[in-house]
Amino acid sequence: MFEINEGTFEACALERSRTLPVVVVFTSDAAPLCRRTEAVVEEEIARRGDAVAVERVDVDCARDLAKRYRVLMVPMFVAFRHGRRVGALVGARPREAVASFLDALRGPSGALGLVEEVRAEREWPEVVAALDELDCADAFDALLARAARGDRAERERVRWLMLSLFAELGDDHLLSVRYRRLLAATLH
Image (tube, rainbow, N blue to C red; front, side):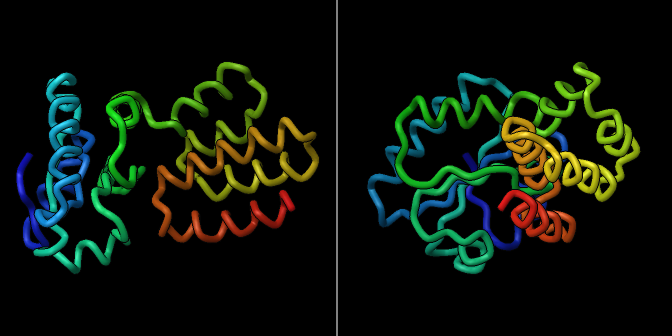
């Protein structure tokens, strides 16, 4: 685990995550519990070989990064894929929770798995076609239309797929922000 800061964060975390999932551990040398949790993370990363990278940020030395990623409690583990934040784990966690978090990063993204499931079932061809064309707005519009007229199970499935796609795009992406509001309005 390497120590990174504001100056190295872009290259060590965001750029590197374009080829390999990266977990950034936001921690503090002043918190002994953080060291124990970091040891668990290092052991679990080592078990996975080169499938996931891990970096360390001391929040006491990199306050701007801590603020940027809304670190309110340490340790906090933030996962990045393809240059975007895709998940987080907050607080000292048991080994099983850390292992599950890391294993989820190794496989295809949750959105990709759900899209492949929908593709295999041939239920929502307009959604799959829009996503194949990388037209998320059309896919979201089609999903919202399905949610508006669907039963409870279909509405829940639409919700999970859209939330997964929002995570893939990034929570701050304009489409995520816009369609999250529309989804909430449609479901309530």
